Length: 357
Image (cartoon, rainbow, N blue to C red; front, side, top):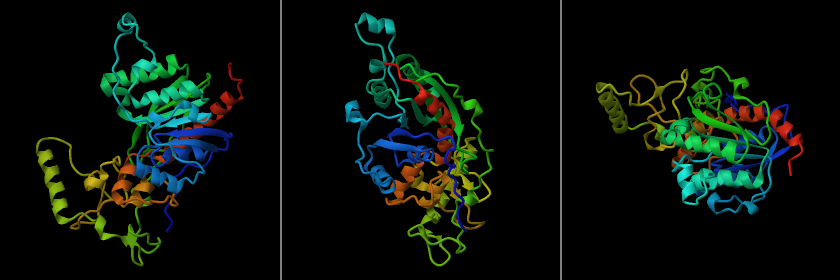
């Protein structure tokens, strides 16, 4: 049995373009933009474990940059598309009139200073790429009572002059997982880009059976995830009696209080909850049923990679703990491949337009 690929095909409308990968993680967005013909010319990621995974899978003849806050824009190459999954932080917004009275700036340099979005904004301001794609959690819109999103959109539209569209998209259908993310796309020039005509697969059309180890010998064993002639899952991923009792008791306690907290027990016919960076702790959000009377198990890191739409060739060269964190922090690759493909004709239009002096 060969696990079905969850990656979107490369776009037939691809145009040659360059892009940079900020807050790159392990390169999920990189894979999406590679798939539509892009060439990555700069990467920044501060976490050393994510740097290792990225470097082991994206063999570039250039070093990865670390902390983007320490990189001067003169050291970032010109590029056509900026891609960033920046962390969400609150902004402190004071009234423009008050700032004027104090003789202070009230553009993005002041409003976003001290946040990681500032570093996205300063690169866009300096390099003026034809387009950008920004990704964040779905709650970005309500973060800090809506003020964070307000500043982001005002900065991108009014301060930087880009034409911006945004939408919350769910990876469910691209992968067998509920995974909602805020996606923000901007173009330097006016285009007809809209999320309304982005074709999305039917939710629930992908099942967990597509990404689970078959354990029947049809898959080659991959240590330490699977072992033996039938490539069965390593017993270390099965919950201990103590942990399984604890999770059941925890769930029952909250059910009695009318809360929805508890574990997520699923089988091959289901769709998983959102994989989180805390999965390494107890795996409670996605537990795989092994049948009645048997303790469930966690997903293996390889199954997590598949659940996020990474290709089978993707190398997992870090500890299980780090791998769980990395995939839990990553993006559903085929969903962003679809967005990148949707951007291509609009990007071609902007690249064909002479740039204003």
